[in-house]
Length: 351
Image (cartoon, rainbow, N blue to C red; front, side):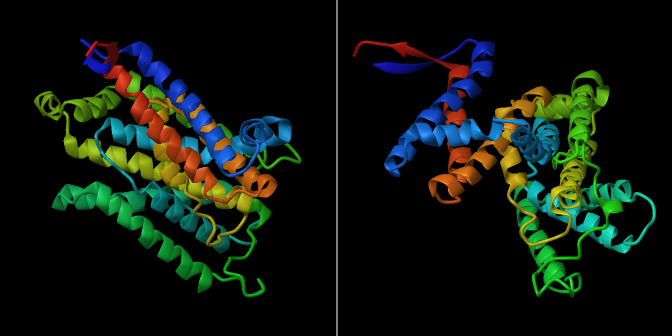
């Protein structure tokens, strides 16, 4: 009989191998799912894992979708390491897109590149939305999980009010959308003919910055100590209030930047379809990446692969839109199961 036996200390090897095993199990279950739906499992895997990487254009789209996941995942990693559970990054993403769009519309007709101001507005918007949660927890001890999550729905209603109301394009054939942004408000592209823009470079710079902050600064050390051992952090004189505001602020700012890059990048206007779940998917990205900046790079690419693979599966195999969410959920579920092997080993015992 197989039994779980507690390890003397967590296994470093399984900490690295667990995500790989989880991905392998997800693939196997995915093949079974394709077969149950009457689809060729090999064709399904090819659409999911090969088509999104087959050429330069495919890679550009893969990196384009990975950029917001990477930015938000980095912010969440700081928060989760600090034991601050911000589940509302999706709302901060939306408000960042709203602030960026308002700035782009206000600066329409400018003769100079305004896209840096547009992105800065998105950062401010995301930070302000996250600050609501931080303030309520700081002053009234509200649960940040519930508050941040509920604010997502408020952000959606703000977005809908604007695109169906005062910001609606009068020349848009009654579609709920703003006017197209001027070229000066759009983030420059890295390569002609491809949609990939300078947001990718910003995300990679953020990876380095977060790594340095977490592992090479006293402030980053204080954040992590506060998450692992709050009593020790208080004894050392580290401020829990500061840790809260830093965690929420950085996450909100990066989520807001991701929202600004979305509307000032591939979309080019504000629409009700801007929120696509990046804020929630980035939670999986952060945990699959082990809350480490370098690991989050790989997990963001993997989650981007699921997004594009799911879209291709809809168009080519006739599968439902929910297939993307199914793969994301499977990955998280199998990762949580495989993480058991970090603290426990399997032993065979008779009887």
